[in-house]
Image (cartoon, rainbow, N blue to C red; front, top):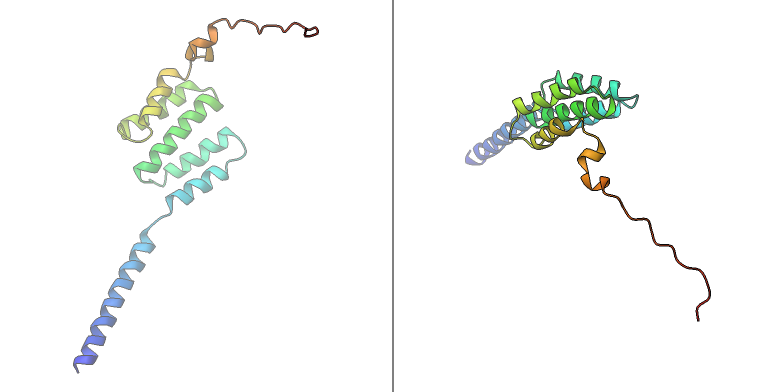
Length: 141
């Protein structure tokens, strides 16, 4: 009888562990895959990318993904569409929701610099570069 009780306990533990794994895998979402799908489905241009990413945010993803998406939307508005007011809104929303997150520093930099030209961002471009020296042609003696 002890043997069958032991087998019963093992079977019960197996069922319990299997049930936990089944429940946890059923509740888990593959957020990265969903994000990759949203981005890859938006190859028609920046407006389509913004639309797909906004739909992704409507699914209430974890903060890690939401911050990345907010940054990407802001960046797309700034660099792809030159709609700086919308870009500013998305970068500000990211900083409000995740001020210490992985994308916060980049969002802050974009807020401070997105409307600046290359000359303003890279002062060394304004310095005059001397023309290259011409080599004299002729025979070597």
